[in-house]
Image 1 (cartoon, rainbow, N blue to C red):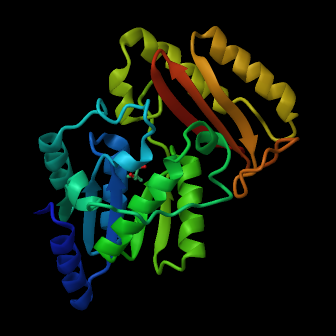
Image 2: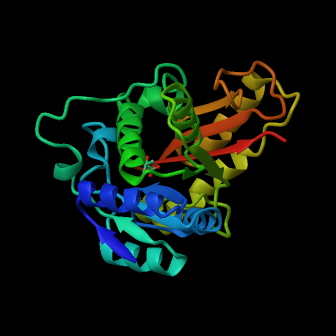
Length: 274
Ligand code: PAF
């Protein structure tokens, strides 16, 4: 397995792979890899000849009061996990070589990013789109694989790919959950046992709304349940799965999205209405 830190060298290597006729899949991550990430790498391996995993805690997608500095990092463990999952190359750039002095070009998606996490985390999707576009360009990927846990992110990236004519396919893989039902997240490491138990209410809540329910009524019920469990609600929304516009009445294909604070840890979860 190859290791790259320099964007230009990765780009050259990937260009060479393409010249040889190899299909490239990219799995962008912020590291501290868990089973959810590994499921993306395994899927990438099924779909492409070369799997590039990027491990980069992207400063541009964090707000000033967010957890950029304390975001968990473990390069050694990530390297081992990538190798075991079958990656061909891992890209560990530094923030200095991803964002050169006076970096001044960013990508703004101006529809799907406006609500939900975008409204609560100003600048977050600008940072995500910018880094993901850079990773697309560096990796020459034919496919990029994301997790459904970041549902809004996946929709925003699909829109960016469509609107900016990136010649690649976006694949979104299902949420991987712990046995308890808790959605896997690198941020779960911040939770103590008590908070882990309390956080289970999120996966229960997103599975509660059913097609035909009135959003206002069911949302109120779910929010009350989440707060009763001891979490602080950030949002609970039932939206059209493609446009992310709130549904008055829930229908098949809608996305039920939640963000809530378990102590200081902001967790997200979602499910699609059957
Ligand atoms: O989902 C993530 O881990 C990040 O937002 C991503 C896509 C790797 C961009 O930094």
